[in-house]
Length: 460
Image (cartoon, rainbow, N blue to C red):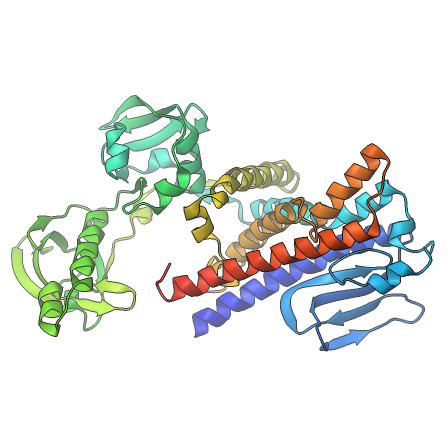
């Protein structure tokens, strides 16, 4: 419960910052061009609100709603998700959105997206200035990588070290590495200390690479016990720090990756068990292990079945601790070009990955507030918090600029049409488009959060 609350609070704080500043972008340009803002709210307020006030001599009511799904800035004379059609029937007023020239209305509509994107670049810059850039370079991962059968069919071998492709050098082991590999025609590796080049098709499906089990490529993790959980199968065997498991159910395992695969096979057998006796047989494992003293022992143990899967009950030695960490410091002024480059690469990667959303697997990977919350760490870490806030700011900027009615991008699309053709879409058309766009957004929201629920119960 504590972990859930920490993640939920981080998500709520992050989204609150982003929504306030996003709506602040609309508010700023509205005020700049003399457009009245009737309401400025954090969170939605159907039926009632938690708090509101209206400063003296101000046209704007500021408030806090009760439904933490965003916020809004109600602009006079604008057809938006408030569906205030009565106002649009009244004579046009000079302080209304609709009375302003198209270029001013365009700036008002892109104000929120502009603020979110600039905010992300600023946060990335300040992260680099305050913490610097810390990472383990792939070329320094001396144990190499672990590859699945699809990767091995392309010429990879376990313990190969990934260095670069024809698209650029790998920085560290992250999503960009998969993105790079999926589009590359050639990859440069180090195999047994010697540089080599492999040819790649250039059109691998990144989603399949990540979602396959085992994944296309993963860190090669030597199997070595770091610590043992109390009253676990590992403790009952007498395993301790420094011991190595050599085989499970007579299947040789030399890496933690292979050990996890063998536990997965136990889970598969357990899933088909029909009686308690079948379950007990499935969970009984023959284990061969090497003690730190040099003695080899073979014994049987009853594995533990939990909601998260079959557990052995030990922590493996953290492989990243064995690698050199590259640290790059940035001065205040140096941090801005570096932060802008970092943020632009994040945006480019996110936009490039959008093509997978329209596939069957991509639709399944859509997530709502639960998926967003899971991205935050289980302990409060300001570095991780600001990294995630910057990433969400880029997502919010990109999603809002999509040409879907009811989003900022929908309004921008119709305004660009007006600027190019000189013809303004009618109010009735805009109202219908707003209803359609709002329906699309509600559908996406339902699907994304339904996916979260299905994943929670192991259905998806």
